[in-house]
Image (cartoon, rainbow, N blue to C red):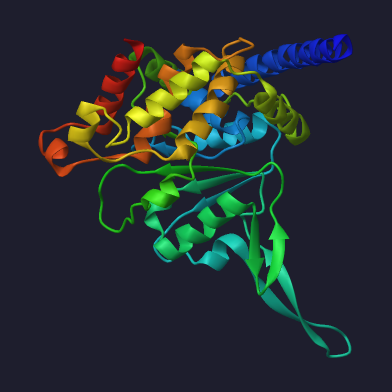
Length: 336
């Protein structure tokens, strides 16, 4: 028994040492991103959390709020091979995945060769994802879920790590196709991007309209990112935090004994919400310089993790309620 205890404590020591190294890397990542993205702390935090947790994020906001800039900056700072796809109504699945072309050699023999599409990147920016047709969206969303694609019966694995940061315009304009619920569920977090604060907007005006623009530097590379993602999954989570995750996610589902949810929510989050919360709470602890997640992490992540995984009843919408109001109420109940 004594032997096993020593091994466990050694293991704990190794995790603490690895976590402390990760803390300094994450602090450096935050520093580089803040050179280029002014203000928007919660947007930057939640987007980085999605990547540290090994998942995808959906950034929702009106045009011109530096969503694309944030993604390209993250690509540079994390040392990832990045591609960008601008989604349009006429975009086809092959424009994302790639296609087979016919080659002819010197002797006249013909053969097919697969030309990889832009999905073969470590960080893929899917710009205005709701502008493409459902058929094209589903080609990308399948890749996000399965980390490989199949063309003409042949399987092609995507690079590791593979992250999709998609942007969506919330203005209900003509020619957009809202993502179906099952596809929204594939995104670890929905990050709402709002207008900048006054001080940040002043800094944007001064810093971005001169001759020289600040460039961020790479802090880590893809291999190191995978190590940090592995560490996130090894971090211990206390029973208190696990119970709080379960209680919060389950309270957001109708038919589970929560009166306000039964009244206002048409359908609630599935188990993926709890999985996302488990991963992101650990990543948030590291991001904030701690070695274990707390209840505060759960309450802070409730909105970005739950809001795209539930829908209100018609009556609640008619009363002018929003999903965010409902989540805020659930968090308030959970805090007691």
